[in-house]
Image (cartoon, rainbow, N blue to C red; front, side, top):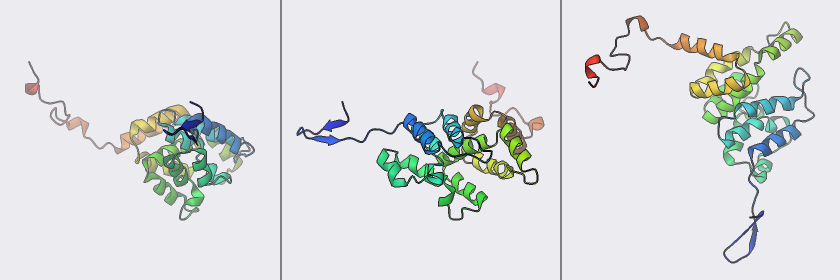
Length: 215
């Protein structure tokens, strides 16, 4: 069927085309085309990387990933996104991760806690954080601003964001965008695990007792 649907009476009504992940990716490339990051690199590379990192999740989350900075860094409005066909859910995620819409945009950690209250927004922010924390980028920022640690806030944000979602969800994102952070994740999980493995009994391990096994 074309872009027109027909009612039972045969009268044509306009149907809004579905907003796809690929549409979001193209829009992100166009919207951020002339922008540069702190290292004077094309900013569109960042937003595309964030969207790509969410490839294991549903379309709304992926769309929000590609468009996570569109309300922050462009004149795009909520209504404009909705009119294009972006879902209410995806727009809600975008708004939650948009710093300028927070109660106190200058309080970064408060913003992180607000984002972490929503599972989907936390996933997008984890991807954003991970790409901003790539070793090569961290090194370049440190060389440019040697007297100002550039990524401490990203380090502090990760535990808050990780606690808002499942561990395997975090792994999927990191594996795609910043696998160097996987070791940090595993080290953190080891630190948080207070199980006394040396004195763990067979029954406590959850495997059942030998007598409970079927013969």
